Image (cartoon, one colour):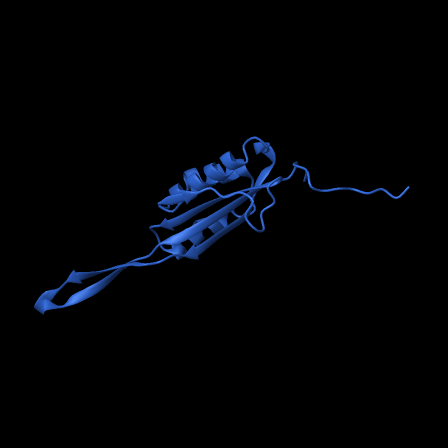
Amino acid sequence: MIITKKKNKRGVNPYTEACAIGQYISMSAHKARRVIDQIRGRSYAETLLILELMPYRACYPILKLVYSAAANGNERFNKASVIINKAQVTEGTAGKKLKPRAKGRGYPIKKPTCHIRIVLKDLEAKDENFISYSLI
């Protein structure tokens, strides 16, 4: 599993959001989506509780990504007001090999991978690039 930490990626505001991307995680995207759908839009503390108690194998790499995204925005964020803003799973490449069978045949074995992206958003943080103009 490769975890890359990306900030200032297109579509992510660096002042109010933090992002973590896990690439080539060895599980099918369908199994990871089953867990991601449960945590999307929830608070940070509630997400940690859900992921620790769910009995699925996909919870552990997703929990690591949530911790990583929180660490990316650690100095700016108050963890009491952080929510899971975006969570998406895309299919990665499938590792292929042949399993030997009877009479010289080979059956293909496919090991699916997926890419998971978690974006946390702080509801109390203010955008420093925002300039307000008053009409006086």
